[in-house]
Image (cartoon, rainbow, N blue to C red):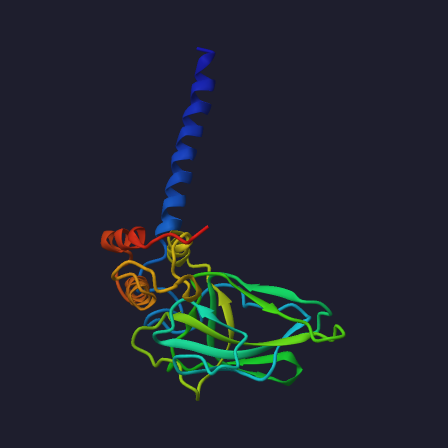
Length: 248
């Protein structure tokens, strides 16, 4: 009879564990494709902390939308995507030596303006697509002679998060938005991480149907399956698996 209290405790522990598992599963299922804030037709900004540049690095002017192709004044032309969203901006560094700053994967660019004092204004309109980086992007800024800092003009290619909204053009301005915390989008970034998807990864020796343009179009549709559809399909996963891996 003395063993009964111990059996009672064990039974309570088992029940508690089952309840905890149920709560975890519920949390994972909370986010639904096509109903994610700031994506697809859902208004607002994507969930996540706003990206803040370090104190020694600033946007010189505005981040503007731009047409395809480089203008020849960029020190870096790269990214992932670009079919609907591409931007151009100048970063100015006060660091006395050459330095590299890396934009994290999941970074978004949203419609808005930089104003004096380092403040930003984020547009509350829902006319333009949000840009989205599925891969981290290192930016190297070469210091001026004498160690007085330096600058770099960047053309950045991005995917879009809002299928039925306008793409970027030279009349649109952007600011760095939240770094996405969406579990569904983070899963996609994990799947894409080892794959050859960045513009600079391609050298025109790729297999048929795996040019940068081909891969970009397919991944953009896969993103739309999450933002506007019912989520990743098995066909999506098979396609991602078939993309060649990056060279090590």
